[in-house]
Amino acid sequence: MGAAVQQKDAGGGRRRGRRRSRARPMAEINITPFVDVMLVLLIIFMVAAPLMTVGVPVELPKTAAGALSGDDEEPLTVTMMASGDIQIQTTPVERDQLVARLRAIAAERASDRVYLRADGAIAYSDVMQVMGALNAGGFANVGLVTDTGGPAFDGRPAAPGE
Image 1: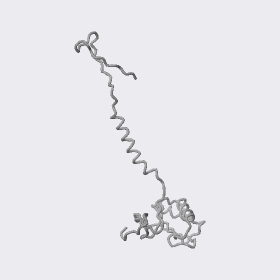
Image 2: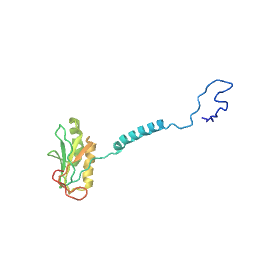
Image 3: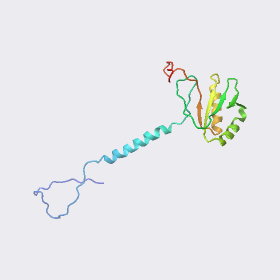
Image 4: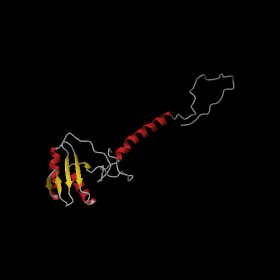
């Protein structure tokens, strides 16, 4: 693209010779399309940024966090006791049979939500292994069950209504 120089006519505003009127090139940059594109990109990134964070909502024992919303279906609960035993609802399950049992249960359920109850004395690595088994068994929506009334993040005790 080239830029042309617009010259003023010295002959009193009239042209001589060819009487063909030509559109004069615009010397300013029109930023309206640029602003439109930038606003669309901004909206796309604002919507996409929260979707890029992947993870499980982690709630540790004794916290001031609120409860998760409930489903119409009876919630499936997996319990890890301090002794190392694992139960699905109230039925004891061996660790090597956990994934197979979870797959059978997941085939019958409409929801992929499961609640994991783990004793506070259990090592973090053991809880993560069971969470991996829950994921392998078909349950991607894992909620960790905690007791309410624990301290808030800033160290102060939680208010009774929180």
